[in-house]
Length: 302
Image (tube, rainbow, N blue to C red; front, side, top):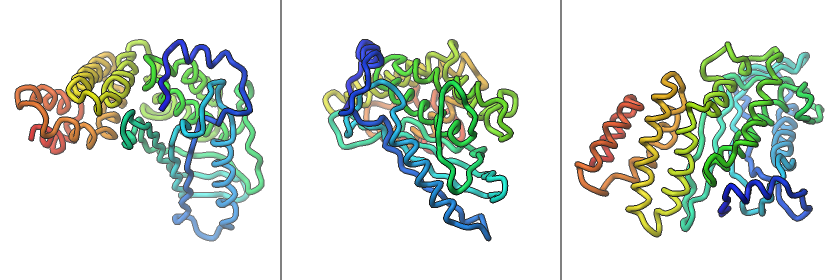
């Protein structure tokens, strides 16, 4: 597993790419077209192949990754509409990121979310090309945004604020996509779209959440095998950082989202461990952060 420090990240970004390095992403892509009738399905086979190649065969950064270090991520795209004349495809995208936990065979989910406006233009024989300086294609912009976002999130779990430079690239894609005629990009359209996703994450008053990423994963989960008590303490501290982030930006959907994709993991970390007096404050805090999952939070008190 990568043991990335801030200095390492800085050095790697300054080094030229080597032909021996692997690409950053190990993405699996699924396209579900069961809601679409009467369309040549070959276009969707080509779409899947094109997206997979675009994500996995491109070097997105100057960081050096070994093949076994590539970031596991998944894209499940459920299309509801497709216009073969305009190439406009509309649907939902389910994006997830996994990260290995040091000293174990366990992979933790570092992000999981439904993008309800996964809309783009694509014709069967389109070639997917992308340039940071000239964002013109809605599909490659969508994929590039998530590629940078995925890498940035992963780096944040490896070093404090380690993904800043890459996450800034994701923000730039959003800013350069404001004129697309598809939903999901504009700052005023939705409080939980791609703009809100990256804008909230990078806001200075939300930095506690990014600090949580490192403390929870690197100081917490990665130490669970060797020192579970110390690891659990770090995870408890990270939950307090989650509250701090929520207090700093009360309308952000990030704290609730985090508790949802970490829900089962959090229950497993605390259930059967410690005393009721040590776990009660954690339970109370999680209920405040996401009361809709109260039935699950009760399990960690056992």
